[in-house]
Image (tube, rainbow, N blue to C red; front, side, top):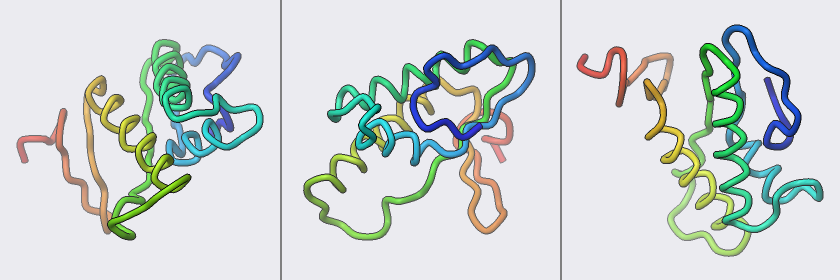
Length: 117
């Protein structure tokens, strides 16, 4: 599922759903005319929307982007976007059953199944 905004009016899911991608969802909530707007409102819309979707599905997989290694000092809109995405990543990871980073096809579990590997 690639949702432009925080799942307003999303239908119930009877199985698993894939949210691809949290990075786009955060940007849409921040910058789309139909989005939530400011930093805190966008963060709340993203987290609440994903949580609403999670409650409607048996399983939910959320994919996010690694956009934090391109530089060290960002200002303005870029800094706002990175703060919202980072806060959403942290909030959703705290609620998740499993958290896994995949780089070059290799999984690294931080939480959940495989975390002890």
